[in-house]
Length: 471
Image 1 (cartoon, rainbow, N blue to C red):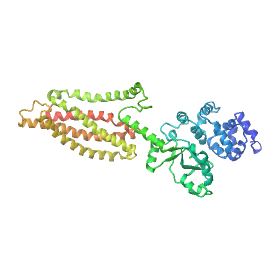
Image 2: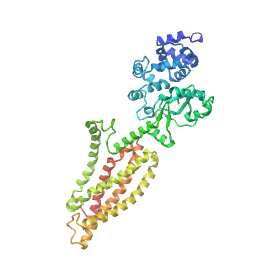
Image 3: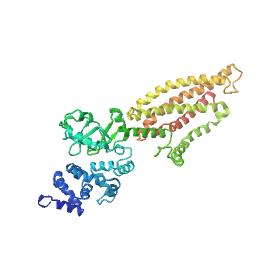
Image 4: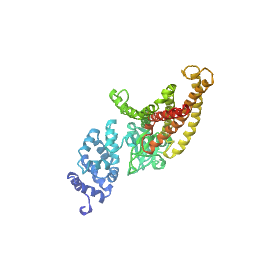
Protein backbone atom coordinates (compact mmCIF):
# COMPACT_ATOMS: atom_id res chain seq x y z
CA UNK A 1 0.00 0.00 0.00
CA UNK A 2 1.21 3.51 -0.87
CA UNK A 3 2.83 5.22 2.16
CA UNK A 4 1.19 2.54 4.26
CA UNK A 5 -2.03 4.61 4.22
CA UNK A 6 -5.42 3.69 2.77
CA UNK A 7 -7.65 6.42 1.38
CA UNK A 8 -11.26 6.45 0.26
CA UNK A 9 -10.15 7.17 -3.31
CA UNK A 10 -7.88 4.09 -3.33
CA UNK A 11 -10.64 1.89 -1.93
CA UNK A 12 -13.19 3.09 -4.50
CA UNK A 13 -10.66 2.59 -7.30
CA UNK A 14 -10.13 -1.06 -6.30
CA UNK A 15 -13.90 -1.54 -6.24
CA UNK A 16 -14.66 0.16 -9.60
CA UNK A 17 -11.85 -1.61 -11.43
CA UNK A 18 -12.77 -4.90 -9.77
CA UNK A 19 -9.20 -5.34 -8.57
CA UNK A 20 -10.01 -8.22 -6.26
CA UNK A 21 -6.41 -9.10 -5.23
CA UNK A 22 -5.72 -5.50 -4.20
CA UNK A 23 -9.02 -5.30 -2.34
CA UNK A 24 -8.23 -8.46 -0.42
CA UNK A 25 -4.78 -7.17 0.43
CA UNK A 26 -6.43 -4.16 2.08
CA UNK A 27 -7.82 -6.42 4.79
CA UNK A 28 -4.47 -8.14 5.18
CA UNK A 29 -2.68 -4.84 5.88
CA UNK A 30 -5.23 -2.76 7.75
CA UNK A 31 -7.44 -3.28 10.78
CA UNK A 32 -11.13 -3.79 10.04
CA UNK A 33 -12.15 -0.82 12.18
CA UNK A 34 -9.96 1.49 10.04
CA UNK A 35 -11.48 0.13 6.83
CA UNK A 36 -14.96 0.55 8.30
CA UNK A 37 -14.37 4.28 8.86
CA UNK A 38 -13.77 4.65 5.11
CA UNK A 39 -16.68 2.38 4.18
CA UNK A 40 -19.00 4.60 6.19
CA UNK A 41 -18.21 7.36 3.68
CA UNK A 42 -19.15 5.27 0.62
CA UNK A 43 -22.40 6.70 -0.75
CA UNK A 44 -23.32 3.88 -3.14
CA UNK A 45 -24.18 0.74 -1.14
CA UNK A 46 -23.65 -1.35 -4.30
CA UNK A 47 -19.96 -0.43 -4.08
CA UNK A 48 -19.93 -1.62 -0.51
CA UNK A 49 -21.63 -4.85 -1.60
CA UNK A 50 -18.65 -5.65 -3.87
CA UNK A 51 -16.40 -5.84 -0.83
CA UNK A 52 -18.67 -8.35 0.85
CA UNK A 53 -18.83 -10.60 -2.19
CA UNK A 54 -15.08 -10.67 -2.88
CA UNK A 55 -13.42 -10.67 0.54
CA UNK A 56 -13.48 -13.67 2.89
CA UNK A 57 -16.08 -13.67 5.61
CA UNK A 58 -13.36 -13.77 8.28
CA UNK A 59 -12.75 -10.11 7.46
CA UNK A 60 -16.13 -8.85 6.26
CA UNK A 61 -18.10 -10.18 9.22
CA UNK A 62 -15.99 -7.99 11.48
CA UNK A 63 -16.22 -5.11 9.01
CA UNK A 64 -20.02 -5.23 9.15
CA UNK A 65 -19.93 -5.07 12.93
CA UNK A 66 -17.88 -1.85 12.83
CA UNK A 67 -20.09 -0.06 10.28
CA UNK A 68 -22.50 2.61 11.48
CA UNK A 69 -26.11 1.55 11.87
CA UNK A 70 -27.03 3.81 8.95
CA UNK A 71 -24.66 2.01 6.58
CA UNK A 72 -25.75 -1.36 7.93
CA UNK A 73 -29.37 -0.48 7.20
CA UNK A 74 -28.57 0.70 3.66
CA UNK A 75 -26.61 -2.47 2.95
CA UNK A 76 -29.25 -4.79 4.35
CA UNK A 77 -32.03 -3.02 2.50
CA UNK A 78 -30.15 -3.63 -0.73
CA UNK A 79 -30.29 -7.39 -0.17
CA UNK A 80 -33.92 -8.02 -1.13
CA UNK A 81 -35.23 -11.45 -2.17
CA UNK A 82 -35.29 -11.76 -5.99
CA UNK A 83 -32.99 -8.80 -6.55
CA UNK A 84 -30.48 -10.32 -4.21
CA UNK A 85 -30.66 -13.71 -5.93
CA UNK A 86 -30.13 -12.04 -9.32
CA UNK A 87 -27.29 -10.00 -7.91
CA UNK A 88 -25.62 -13.15 -6.62
CA UNK A 89 -26.08 -14.89 -9.95
CA UNK A 90 -24.54 -11.99 -11.87
CA UNK A 91 -21.75 -11.32 -9.43
CA UNK A 92 -18.32 -10.80 -10.97
CA UNK A 93 -16.01 -13.06 -8.97
CA UNK A 94 -13.37 -15.70 -9.68
CA UNK A 95 -15.79 -18.40 -8.67
CA UNK A 96 -19.42 -17.91 -7.73
CA UNK A 97 -19.33 -21.02 -5.58
CA UNK A 98 -16.36 -19.73 -3.58
CA UNK A 99 -18.27 -16.48 -3.16
CA UNK A 100 -21.28 -18.25 -1.68
CA UNK A 101 -19.14 -20.31 0.66
CA UNK A 102 -17.22 -17.25 1.84
CA UNK A 103 -20.29 -15.02 2.13
CA UNK A 104 -20.49 -13.46 5.60
CA UNK A 105 -22.79 -15.15 8.05
CA UNK A 106 -24.65 -11.89 8.75
CA UNK A 107 -25.35 -11.42 5.03
CA UNK A 108 -26.66 -14.98 4.82
CA UNK A 109 -29.00 -14.19 7.69
CA UNK A 110 -30.43 -11.18 5.87
CA UNK A 111 -30.92 -13.19 2.68
CA UNK A 112 -32.90 -15.82 4.57
CA UNK A 113 -34.85 -13.25 6.54
CA UNK A 114 -36.27 -11.45 3.49
CA UNK A 115 -37.08 -14.65 1.62
CA UNK A 116 -40.31 -16.61 1.61
CA UNK A 117 -40.24 -20.35 2.25
CA UNK A 118 -39.60 -21.33 -1.36
CA UNK A 119 -36.83 -18.81 -1.96
CA UNK A 120 -35.28 -19.62 1.40
CA UNK A 121 -35.17 -23.27 0.41
CA UNK A 122 -33.45 -22.35 -2.86
CA UNK A 123 -30.96 -20.13 -1.08
CA UNK A 124 -30.22 -22.82 1.47
CA UNK A 125 -29.48 -25.24 -1.31
CA UNK A 126 -27.19 -22.68 -2.96
CA UNK A 127 -25.36 -22.20 0.30
CA UNK A 128 -24.94 -25.94 0.73
CA UNK A 129 -27.36 -26.08 3.62
CA UNK A 130 -28.37 -29.63 2.85
CA UNK A 131 -32.00 -30.63 3.10
CA UNK A 132 -32.66 -32.18 6.48
CA UNK A 133 -30.06 -30.08 8.35
CA UNK A 134 -30.44 -27.35 10.95
CA UNK A 135 -29.61 -24.77 8.28
CA UNK A 136 -32.55 -25.83 6.14
CA UNK A 137 -35.11 -25.34 8.93
CA UNK A 138 -33.70 -22.35 10.79
CA UNK A 139 -35.13 -18.84 10.80
CA UNK A 140 -33.29 -15.56 11.11
CA UNK A 141 -36.17 -13.70 12.69
CA UNK A 142 -34.68 -13.25 16.16
CA UNK A 143 -33.53 -10.39 18.37
CA UNK A 144 -29.77 -9.85 18.33
CA UNK A 145 -28.18 -7.81 21.11
CA UNK A 146 -24.62 -6.63 21.78
CA UNK A 147 -22.93 -7.75 24.99
CA UNK A 148 -21.99 -4.17 25.94
CA UNK A 149 -25.62 -3.00 25.82
CA UNK A 150 -27.52 -2.01 28.93
CA UNK A 151 -30.85 -3.55 29.87
CA UNK A 152 -32.55 -0.31 28.86
CA UNK A 153 -30.88 -0.38 25.43
CA UNK A 154 -31.89 -4.01 24.97
CA UNK A 155 -35.53 -3.33 25.82
CA UNK A 156 -35.55 -0.36 23.44
CA UNK A 157 -34.20 -2.60 20.67
CA UNK A 158 -36.84 -5.23 21.37
CA UNK A 159 -39.61 -2.62 21.31
CA UNK A 160 -38.34 -1.39 17.97
CA UNK A 161 -37.88 -4.69 16.12
CA UNK A 162 -39.35 -7.41 18.32
CA UNK A 163 -42.83 -7.42 16.81
CA UNK A 164 -41.41 -8.72 13.50
CA UNK A 165 -39.32 -11.47 15.07
CA UNK A 166 -40.10 -15.14 15.59
CA UNK A 167 -39.62 -14.87 19.34
CA UNK A 168 -38.63 -12.33 21.99
CA UNK A 169 -38.91 -14.69 24.93
CA UNK A 170 -35.26 -15.62 24.37
CA UNK A 171 -32.81 -13.08 22.98
CA UNK A 172 -29.27 -13.67 21.77
CA UNK A 173 -26.16 -11.74 22.76
CA UNK A 174 -23.08 -11.48 20.58
CA UNK A 175 -19.77 -9.68 20.73
CA UNK A 176 -18.45 -7.38 18.02
CA UNK A 177 -17.29 -10.37 15.96
CA UNK A 178 -20.80 -11.84 16.08
CA UNK A 179 -19.69 -14.68 18.29
CA UNK A 180 -22.58 -15.88 20.45
CA UNK A 181 -21.62 -15.21 24.07
CA UNK A 182 -24.92 -15.57 25.90
CA UNK A 183 -28.71 -15.58 25.95
CA UNK A 184 -31.12 -13.53 27.99
CA UNK A 185 -34.83 -14.03 28.56
CA UNK A 186 -37.37 -11.24 28.38
CA UNK A 187 -38.14 -11.91 32.06
CA UNK A 188 -34.51 -11.27 33.04
CA UNK A 189 -34.57 -7.99 31.15
CA UNK A 190 -37.85 -6.81 32.68
CA UNK A 191 -36.78 -7.54 36.26
CA UNK A 192 -33.23 -6.11 35.97
CA UNK A 193 -32.08 -2.56 36.63
CA UNK A 194 -32.13 -0.39 33.47
CA UNK A 195 -28.39 0.43 33.54
CA UNK A 196 -27.24 -3.15 34.14
CA UNK A 197 -24.98 -4.48 31.39
CA UNK A 198 -26.22 -7.53 29.50
CA UNK A 199 -22.99 -9.40 30.12
CA UNK A 200 -23.82 -9.25 33.83
CA UNK A 201 -27.21 -10.97 33.56
CA UNK A 202 -26.86 -13.15 30.47
CA UNK A 203 -26.71 -16.94 30.66
CA UNK A 204 -23.48 -18.34 29.25
CA UNK A 205 -24.53 -21.99 29.59
CA UNK A 206 -26.72 -22.77 26.58
CA UNK A 207 -27.21 -25.47 23.96
CA UNK A 208 -26.30 -24.74 20.34
CA UNK A 209 -26.22 -26.68 17.09
CA UNK A 210 -24.15 -26.47 13.94
CA UNK A 211 -25.78 -25.37 10.70
CA UNK A 212 -24.96 -28.79 9.18
CA UNK A 213 -26.37 -30.87 12.05
CA UNK A 214 -29.07 -33.36 11.12
CA UNK A 215 -32.54 -32.00 11.85
CA UNK A 216 -33.44 -35.20 13.69
CA UNK A 217 -30.54 -34.66 16.08
CA UNK A 218 -31.80 -31.12 16.66
CA UNK A 219 -35.27 -32.45 17.48
CA UNK A 220 -33.76 -34.94 19.94
CA UNK A 221 -31.83 -32.13 21.64
CA UNK A 222 -35.06 -30.13 22.04
CA UNK A 223 -36.66 -33.10 23.77
CA UNK A 224 -33.64 -33.95 25.91
CA UNK A 225 -33.05 -30.40 27.20
CA UNK A 226 -36.69 -29.23 27.13
CA UNK A 227 -35.93 -26.31 24.80
CA UNK A 228 -38.15 -23.77 23.08
CA UNK A 229 -35.44 -22.29 20.88
CA UNK A 230 -31.89 -23.22 19.87
CA UNK A 231 -29.23 -21.01 18.25
CA UNK A 232 -27.62 -22.20 15.01
CA UNK A 233 -23.91 -21.52 14.49
CA UNK A 234 -21.78 -21.77 11.37
CA UNK A 235 -18.36 -23.41 11.24
CA UNK A 236 -16.82 -20.15 12.49
CA UNK A 237 -18.99 -20.41 15.61
CA UNK A 238 -20.95 -17.33 14.60
CA UNK A 239 -24.70 -17.03 15.11
CA UNK A 240 -26.60 -17.24 11.81
CA UNK A 241 -30.09 -18.36 12.82
CA UNK A 242 -32.31 -20.10 15.34
CA UNK A 243 -34.50 -23.17 15.38
CA UNK A 244 -37.78 -22.81 17.26
CA UNK A 245 -40.11 -25.39 18.74
CA UNK A 246 -42.59 -25.00 15.88
CA UNK A 247 -39.79 -25.81 13.42
CA UNK A 248 -39.02 -28.93 15.44
CA UNK A 249 -42.67 -29.98 15.45
CA UNK A 250 -42.59 -29.85 11.65
CA UNK A 251 -39.44 -31.97 11.67
CA UNK A 252 -41.01 -34.56 13.96
CA UNK A 253 -44.07 -34.75 11.71
CA UNK A 254 -41.89 -35.05 8.59
CA UNK A 255 -39.58 -37.71 10.07
CA UNK A 256 -42.53 -39.70 11.45
CA UNK A 257 -44.32 -39.60 8.11
CA UNK A 258 -41.17 -40.75 6.30
CA UNK A 259 -40.66 -43.63 8.74
CA UNK A 260 -44.29 -44.74 8.42
CA UNK A 261 -44.08 -44.71 4.63
CA UNK A 262 -40.74 -46.52 4.57
CA UNK A 263 -42.06 -49.17 6.98
CA UNK A 264 -44.94 -49.66 4.55
CA UNK A 265 -42.48 -49.92 1.63
CA UNK A 266 -43.43 -46.58 0.07
CA UNK A 267 -40.95 -43.87 -0.83
CA UNK A 268 -41.57 -40.57 1.03
CA UNK A 269 -43.90 -38.10 -0.68
CA UNK A 270 -42.73 -34.60 -1.56
CA UNK A 271 -46.29 -33.29 -1.17
CA UNK A 272 -49.38 -34.27 0.79
CA UNK A 273 -51.45 -37.28 -0.22
CA UNK A 274 -54.33 -35.14 -1.44
CA UNK A 275 -52.03 -32.98 -3.57
CA UNK A 276 -50.17 -35.96 -5.05
CA UNK A 277 -51.39 -37.35 -8.35
CA UNK A 278 -52.29 -40.99 -8.89
CA UNK A 279 -49.18 -41.34 -11.06
CA UNK A 280 -46.96 -39.97 -8.29
CA UNK A 281 -48.45 -42.32 -5.69
CA UNK A 282 -48.04 -45.27 -8.04
CA UNK A 283 -44.44 -44.28 -8.76
CA UNK A 284 -43.67 -44.20 -5.03
CA UNK A 285 -45.23 -47.63 -4.40
CA UNK A 286 -44.35 -49.63 -7.51
CA UNK A 287 -40.54 -49.95 -7.15
CA UNK A 288 -40.80 -51.42 -3.67
CA UNK A 289 -43.51 -53.86 -4.71
CA UNK A 290 -41.34 -55.05 -7.58
CA UNK A 291 -38.43 -55.57 -5.20
CA UNK A 292 -40.69 -57.52 -2.84
CA UNK A 293 -41.86 -59.69 -5.75
CA UNK A 294 -38.24 -60.60 -6.41
CA UNK A 295 -37.66 -61.33 -2.74
CA UNK A 296 -40.90 -63.32 -2.68
CA UNK A 297 -39.39 -65.65 -5.24
CA UNK A 298 -37.68 -67.43 -2.36
CA UNK A 299 -41.07 -68.40 -0.93
CA UNK A 300 -42.19 -69.57 -4.39
CA UNK A 301 -39.08 -71.71 -4.78
CA UNK A 302 -39.62 -73.31 -1.38
CA UNK A 303 -43.26 -74.12 -2.19
CA UNK A 304 -42.23 -75.58 -5.51
CA UNK A 305 -39.48 -77.74 -4.03
CA UNK A 306 -41.82 -79.19 -1.39
CA UNK A 307 -44.80 -79.73 -3.69
CA UNK A 308 -44.67 -83.45 -2.88
CA UNK A 309 -45.60 -82.63 0.72
CA UNK A 310 -48.98 -81.26 -0.37
CA UNK A 311 -49.63 -84.33 -2.46
CA UNK A 312 -49.01 -86.68 0.45
CA UNK A 313 -50.55 -84.61 3.26
CA UNK A 314 -53.00 -82.19 1.68
CA UNK A 315 -53.99 -80.55 4.98
CA UNK A 316 -50.52 -79.01 5.25
CA UNK A 317 -51.53 -76.31 2.78
CA UNK A 318 -54.32 -75.07 5.07
CA UNK A 319 -51.87 -73.75 7.68
CA UNK A 320 -49.47 -71.87 5.41
CA UNK A 321 -51.29 -68.50 5.76
CA UNK A 322 -51.28 -68.56 9.57
CA UNK A 323 -47.61 -69.55 9.64
CA UNK A 324 -46.56 -66.76 7.31
CA UNK A 325 -48.77 -64.15 8.97
CA UNK A 326 -47.70 -64.98 12.51
CA UNK A 327 -44.00 -65.09 11.66
CA UNK A 328 -44.17 -61.87 9.67
CA UNK A 329 -46.14 -60.07 12.36
CA UNK A 330 -43.68 -61.16 15.07
CA UNK A 331 -40.76 -59.88 13.02
CA UNK A 332 -42.57 -56.63 12.29
CA UNK A 333 -43.22 -56.08 16.01
CA UNK A 334 -39.53 -56.37 16.84
CA UNK A 335 -38.36 -54.25 13.92
CA UNK A 336 -40.89 -51.52 14.80
CA UNK A 337 -39.77 -51.45 18.45
CA UNK A 338 -36.09 -51.32 17.56
CA UNK A 339 -36.65 -48.69 14.86
CA UNK A 340 -38.52 -46.55 17.40
CA UNK A 341 -35.70 -47.01 19.93
CA UNK A 342 -33.15 -45.90 17.33
CA UNK A 343 -35.28 -42.87 16.39
CA UNK A 344 -35.47 -41.83 20.06
CA UNK A 345 -31.72 -42.35 20.46
CA UNK A 346 -32.33 -45.11 23.02
CA UNK A 347 -30.54 -47.75 20.94
CA UNK A 348 -27.21 -47.38 19.16
CA UNK A 349 -25.07 -49.54 16.90
CA UNK A 350 -22.98 -50.71 19.88
CA UNK A 351 -26.10 -52.22 21.49
CA UNK A 352 -26.38 -54.93 18.82
CA UNK A 353 -25.46 -57.84 21.10
CA UNK A 354 -27.68 -56.64 23.91
CA UNK A 355 -30.66 -56.16 21.59
CA UNK A 356 -30.29 -59.59 19.97
CA UNK A 357 -30.02 -61.31 23.36
CA UNK A 358 -33.04 -59.42 24.67
CA UNK A 359 -35.11 -60.21 21.58
CA UNK A 360 -34.10 -63.86 21.92
CA UNK A 361 -35.49 -63.96 25.47
CA UNK A 362 -38.66 -62.19 24.36
CA UNK A 363 -38.97 -64.58 21.43
CA UNK A 364 -38.68 -67.64 23.70
CA UNK A 365 -41.54 -66.41 25.88
CA UNK A 366 -43.72 -65.31 22.97
CA UNK A 367 -42.91 -68.44 20.97
CA UNK A 368 -43.87 -70.72 23.86
CA UNK A 369 -47.16 -68.89 24.31
CA UNK A 370 -47.95 -68.98 20.59
CA UNK A 371 -46.89 -72.62 20.25
CA UNK A 372 -48.99 -73.88 23.15
CA UNK A 373 -52.04 -71.93 22.07
CA UNK A 374 -51.64 -73.07 18.45
CA UNK A 375 -51.43 -76.72 19.50
CA UNK A 376 -54.68 -76.54 21.46
CA UNK A 377 -56.50 -74.41 18.89
CA UNK A 378 -55.57 -76.56 15.88
CA UNK A 379 -56.45 -79.72 17.79
CA UNK A 380 -59.90 -78.25 18.48
CA UNK A 381 -60.34 -77.12 14.85
CA UNK A 382 -59.61 -80.59 13.45
CA UNK A 383 -61.45 -82.50 16.20
CA UNK A 384 -64.62 -80.48 15.75
CA UNK A 385 -64.49 -80.56 11.95
CA UNK A 386 -63.82 -76.86 11.45
CA UNK A 387 -60.86 -78.05 9.40
CA UNK A 388 -61.55 -81.28 7.55
CA UNK A 389 -58.86 -83.98 7.81
CA UNK A 390 -60.18 -87.20 6.30
CA UNK A 391 -57.26 -89.55 6.92
CA UNK A 392 -57.32 -89.69 10.71
CA UNK A 393 -59.36 -92.81 11.32
CA UNK A 394 -62.36 -93.27 13.60
CA UNK A 395 -63.14 -90.56 16.09
CA UNK A 396 -61.24 -90.91 19.37
CA UNK A 397 -59.27 -93.92 18.16
CA UNK A 398 -55.53 -94.09 18.77
CA UNK A 399 -54.88 -93.16 15.14
CA UNK A 400 -57.26 -90.23 15.43
CA UNK A 401 -55.42 -88.85 18.48
CA UNK A 402 -52.01 -89.43 16.91
CA UNK A 403 -52.74 -87.84 13.53
CA UNK A 404 -54.35 -84.75 15.01
CA UNK A 405 -51.48 -84.41 17.49
CA UNK A 406 -48.93 -84.69 14.68
CA UNK A 407 -50.58 -81.90 12.66
CA UNK A 408 -51.07 -79.67 15.71
CA UNK A 409 -47.55 -80.42 16.90
CA UNK A 410 -46.07 -79.64 13.47
CA UNK A 411 -47.79 -76.27 13.24
CA UNK A 412 -47.05 -75.29 16.85
CA UNK A 413 -43.38 -76.30 16.54
CA UNK A 414 -43.06 -74.32 13.32
CA UNK A 415 -44.73 -71.31 14.88
CA UNK A 416 -42.46 -71.46 17.92
CA UNK A 417 -39.33 -71.64 15.75
CA UNK A 418 -40.62 -69.04 13.29
CA UNK A 419 -41.41 -66.56 16.08
CA UNK A 420 -37.98 -67.19 17.59
CA UNK A 421 -36.25 -66.60 14.29
CA UNK A 422 -38.41 -63.71 13.12
CA UNK A 423 -38.00 -61.68 16.29
CA UNK A 424 -34.23 -62.02 16.17
CA UNK A 425 -34.22 -61.08 12.47
CA UNK A 426 -36.66 -58.23 13.01
CA UNK A 427 -34.58 -56.85 15.88
CA UNK A 428 -31.27 -57.22 14.05
CA UNK A 429 -32.08 -55.72 10.65
CA UNK A 430 -32.62 -52.10 11.84
CA UNK A 431 -29.29 -52.23 13.67
CA UNK A 432 -27.61 -53.64 10.58
CA UNK A 433 -29.17 -50.73 8.67
CA UNK A 434 -27.56 -48.07 10.87
CA UNK A 435 -24.26 -49.99 10.77
CA UNK A 436 -24.23 -49.58 6.98
CA UNK A 437 -25.61 -46.01 7.29
CA UNK A 438 -29.10 -46.72 5.96
CA UNK A 439 -32.46 -45.67 7.35
CA UNK A 440 -33.57 -48.42 9.81
CA UNK A 441 -37.19 -47.83 8.82
CA UNK A 442 -36.39 -49.37 5.43
CA UNK A 443 -35.65 -52.67 7.18
CA UNK A 444 -39.07 -52.77 8.84
CA UNK A 445 -42.44 -53.77 7.50
CA UNK A 446 -42.68 -55.70 4.21
CA UNK A 447 -38.93 -56.20 3.96
CA UNK A 448 -38.80 -58.09 7.26
CA UNK A 449 -42.08 -59.87 6.49
CA UNK A 450 -40.81 -61.16 3.15
CA UNK A 451 -37.64 -62.59 4.69
CA UNK A 452 -39.51 -64.16 7.59
CA UNK A 453 -42.17 -65.67 5.29
CA UNK A 454 -39.54 -67.59 3.34
CA UNK A 455 -37.87 -68.73 6.56
CA UNK A 456 -41.18 -69.91 8.06
CA UNK A 457 -42.04 -71.93 4.95
CA UNK A 458 -38.65 -73.58 4.91
CA UNK A 459 -38.96 -74.55 8.58
CA UNK A 460 -42.50 -75.83 8.02
CA UNK A 461 -41.54 -78.23 5.26
CA UNK A 462 -38.36 -79.38 6.95
CA UNK A 463 -40.34 -80.31 10.06
CA UNK A 464 -43.03 -81.89 7.86
CA UNK A 465 -40.45 -84.18 6.28
CA UNK A 466 -39.30 -85.28 9.71
CA UNK A 467 -42.71 -85.80 11.35
CA UNK A 468 -44.50 -87.40 8.40
CA UNK A 469 -41.47 -89.12 6.84
CA UNK A 470 -42.04 -87.33 3.53
CA UNK A 471 -39.61 -87.87 0.67
